[in-house]
Length: 414
Image (cartoon, rainbow, N blue to C red; front, top):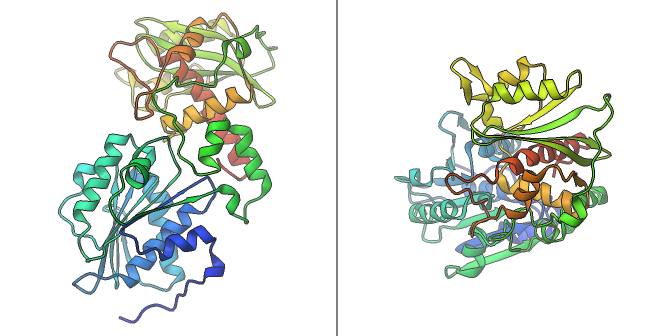
């Protein structure tokens, strides 16, 4: 079949994008800051491989990996179908199996949550996007499985794009222990001349110095094996926080653990977070917690920021934890799919810019912020039976959801 009438011109791409698109290295990685054009680069790299890099059958067969299927659908599956429409390439999109079939070959979407399922196929090229949001053991297994199946051409290529998430999978694969024929490209957010200066200013105002180096400069920064809320400082962030006037809505982060069940009570003013009370209930349930909140803050507007797992988790046989809160008259705000690393980034950024204020009475929250640590993969350590981690999870629910909602309202989600 003749190639479609689509041409890629250097003037339409940023320098690092063009370098990535034209790389013939066995393994090529584009590690960049937020808004540096990684996702667009990934889409066009896949399109180029589909059209120009067939296997022995005369057609390409690409394997594309995302941390989760929902992320893969929103960032690749649907945008790639739109790209095929623009190129006037006919295709069949199987949304249940996440396979796109074209006259030039097929593209199959895989999930990094199940790397063990990457079996059977032989790929002409493989790509992975945002693999660093996976825990490192899963990320490394996914790369290994992709490479095992990447044998449909003598010059089959593994192409990776990601924001740097500490010294994780991308660091290990691209820089610390690279295979022969590996190249890494670092891209800064500021390299993207199409971004507004306010977008970059918003990132700097949201993140701390270490995260700016990672998410603007595209550099690997150690965020592992350390205090999880490392930007928290007791002498700076702990001081008297008054109960707000009755007209001010209360924002309550909730973690649905049974022992302890926790909640961080506060309010938001001028994009700053004020926590003045906490609940730390042993061997409890959502009914008791909601009763206490309603009694302690009778007549006030209550906005709960619960763990989204409460949709399916049930305190009673026929009622979910979310329904219990709603029936009490509380408003709910939650967002699915916020990774642990992302919520930590938002919290540390807020602490670094002195936008979090905690009353000394919140002793369990303060202890969490000082004692909770991450492991060597950057994930919060949660030993069996630990009494830590829960109330800081509740606090971060408020900070993360508010930050995401605020940036979306500005039309430039971070």
